[in-house]
Amino acid sequence: MKIRSLIFGLLLIITTQVVHANPIDEGKAIFSARCAACHNINKQLTGPALAGVDQRHPVEWIIKFVHSSQTLVKGGDKDAVALFERFNKIPMPDHPDLTEDNIRHIVEYIKSESKPAEATTAPFSKPGKLESNMKPLGKGDIGIFGIYLLVVGMLIVVLLFGVRVNKLEAQRRKEEKKEEA
Image (cartoon, rainbow, N blue to C red; front, side, top):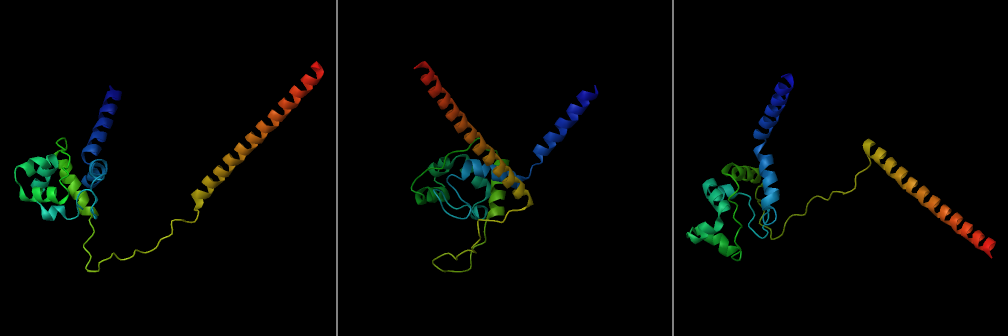
């Protein structure tokens, strides 16, 4: 009886953690899996940049568009038709399996990742700060590096041992042929 209570308690804790997941994290996961192939938040790809989409369209419209963009286009929605025309009449795939909450979470993620518009009107982007891709080894990295060197050293020893065994075997065969002759 105690085991059943323990299992039920653990399941209850796990399900409440899943239900109360951060909407931005959930939106990020869905965006990465379903949207990122055609959309970026801050720059145009196959589809439009999505920064500020919640300011350009009501969330209800976004939900309808994500569920079936072509339904809105065929229905004559001026914003949907304009997007369809602007992006070479490439239809956005329908996502009827996404719930309204899923789409709201994606919008929340987009809002959290949107960069504010630049005040400059230059025809080119500002160069970013140069950062080195190489970082010095930390305390934990030295241990990993040591293990790496140890493994490489062991591989070298095994290869040398294999070469030596091969030479001894070849020498043994030579001696057997001499004895037979």
